[in-house]
Length: 284
Image (cartoon, rainbow, N blue to C red; front, side):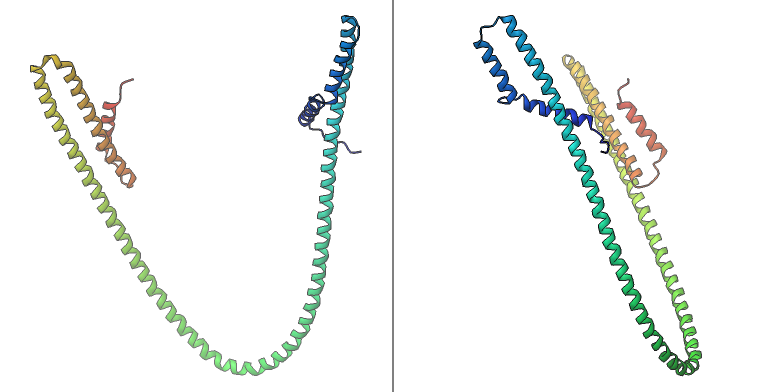
């Protein structure tokens, strides 16, 4: 008998399931335990004797139960392995039989093809003889027309070459026009982005001036309202922070606009963006 590879983890799982089934409620093991308990309660035995007898019986039953559960689990796995092996052999035989049938079909088809080829070859030889006769008749006429056809073909090739050259010129002009259009469009987009960036910067400056004026107004108010001094100082700081954040957002959007459009970001704009970010970033 061939050696079977045992799956230890599966063997343990099977053993646990079998053991749980054997000792489950209303099983033979459970009924036996209940019967023993009931029987010992009806007998006039010393407690020590009861314990000794029960211990021996329980130990014997546990050993037998464990051995039987393990034997069943082992048999299950061996049966499963043997079944898998038998299925594998069956599949192999099926595949071999299928291959043999396919080979027989191919051999039959090959023989049929060879027979058909021989028949076709015989027909072709007869037809070839007829064609050779006809060919000999046609060769004379063909040679007389061949020179004329070659001249016409040469003229046609010359005309085709002229057409190809003209087409190449048109394609080159079209590509040049497309390139010029793309360059012009890219320049317009670059100018538009520059204009947008300039407008955003001007807007930021206007907001800065507005906030400065507002800050000056708040500062003037603090001279007459000393009791609100701390609140005004916080408001001024808040406006300054918001202004710096707003300016940083505008410059950052402008930088991203250049980058996303594939245009080099001006060094001055990048430096200004980094300075603004440093100003609104808390020191560590």
